[in-house]
Length: 491
Image 1 (cartoon, rainbow, N blue to C red):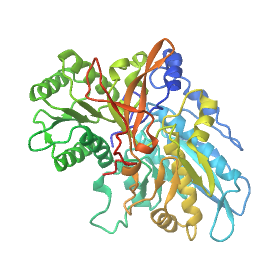
Image 2 (image 1 turned 30 degrees about the horizontal axis):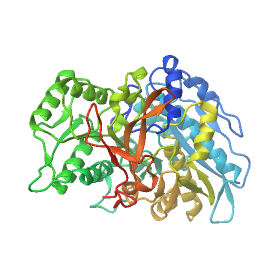
Image 3 (image 1 turned 90 degrees about the vertical axis):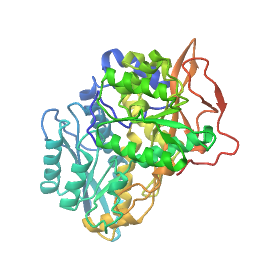
């Protein structure tokens, strides 16, 4: 996956409630893009049961030393506490400390031998650099003897992390975009050590196109054409291939106007693509644009009068900056655009961590009390720690092989839903729990605000209507969920 930066945010979701919009509007002028200006103070505000030292310019460790006990396990992480991806690193840093404190407060991880192991957390700043992150991983193993490594969205490239894990035979757990090509379908998976608490491109294809089929199914008398838009990075290309294959499986036609190697920020290329899609009568646009390209796409479509029935867009369209004009977003023009992501702060899911139940509401409230705005990925990061702790409790011993075997064998109840892993490290149930969301405009006082509403899974839907077909004005609302709907849209 291409590394994420502050101005190139990928595959993250923003809470679908009014509060996030209000808070971001208040702080946007001072905070800049994605609330980064206060990152150094946010780091130092971490509350732990032991001392925490931080550094912003080197790879010295941010450590949390466990209290004394018969056993100790080390969780290591290389996070972007500084640099272009620090929005993710700051939140991840706080979440990892919060999760480790919670587990240690329960007495630590119960082991098969009857002892309990307290967690020592070691975090190194990678300064948003792949090279430094790789060096940090080596240090975490050679100096701190980490039992597991925790990953961060937006830092080290997924493939680099996977190769490191394979070479050093250490479990790495985090929001990695493990595509279908990495599932070891034709091998014994003996070299697979990465476990992705994240969705993949097949989930995106399924959640969009299964929904689209409910409102506009193709047939021999009713052909439906989809224009594909993808940027020139590996995650976008995987998204395109999966989307194209599934669309054709469902009977849709791929528009010859599709642009599957888009150069980021090209206004002329965007104009060419959308003009061709309009001329071809493409019924929907499917793609993975970063926020700025998503904004460019919708603005350009409005300028040329192109109104496809559906915008099936993920990645940058699932973040607040896509909607907020104060952050360069679209404001009310987002209304009707669809997006997708595997976690959202208001999901009514409970996680079971070492037999203790926590809810999304629990962790979100704790985060908001410190940072005064909702989290972006807290549930994803917390889930990784919970999975690691539960796997260690179920492992026959503390060896790397035993921990990996437990990760592959058991099912975990997380803030994202049930989670178990394929031998290649993919989240098996990710299709079932992938969220389909739509930007909708809701009343707020004397004004209106764009809000992400959950459409599927049906049992967690946060709206009673869906905007379809898409138009820039006089939008029509269809009752949602449909009376015949099932609980999920799994492919």
